[in-house]
Image: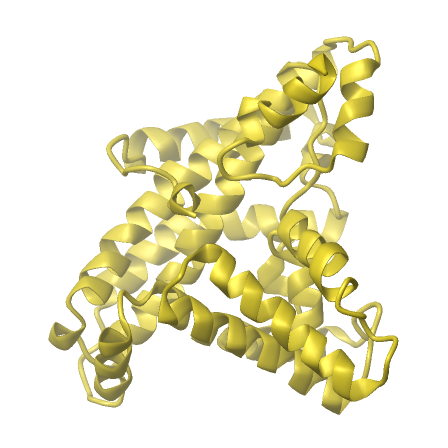
Length: 317
């Protein structure tokens, strides 16, 4: 009973994940844990990175996103496009930042939580995106909804039905609002469309770099359409944003420059993670290189960090 109580009340991941499975967590409770220098170093790195993602990336981009989505009638054209792109990185920075902090704190306590994000915006198709985004939720939906509904065992039509219902319920999990319903329908539709055209794929196709970049860029546009549906405050606001999207307005270059400044370190770290396959790969770097990265992130936090940025987005779900 005590072990189970620790599992259900483990505070680092209690509010916003990762959604840790008992089969992975309980053995760690029951086994002896040792706090080593390596664990402390890895935990501190994850906490630093997560804090950077939250107070530098997410909270600064909120200053671009919130004015547009809170007053859609006052914005047009490329301003809306930039706000949608900004929200894509805001929600990623906010949510993956929380997951990194949760993993880091857990490491300091002797526990290993699952990796919840694997560079989702490097995905080349919808299936790969959901293997990279909020992995603990997507695997939970797969195991307890999709497979329980029958998975892909009973032919293509029932497979499409199961995909659709799983993503629809995944949308409703975020809230009983029409925009989340529409977001779930959209995500289910993307998965079905990809399966219809390309069939079932376990791993993304190995392609040369140029085509891979094109695939990633195209998939990112589809992802951002989904984020538009996810972020709107109401269906009326969605209608206004879509109408105003096609009205011309000069590019807010100051927003573009601001995004470039705050996102550059994140993109470089994500590229390194995509190549190495491990966020903790930095521990293999030379000490001078690691120190440089730590100092750069700390400098960004000191210069651009917003200590009054508000709670994590996923606290509301």
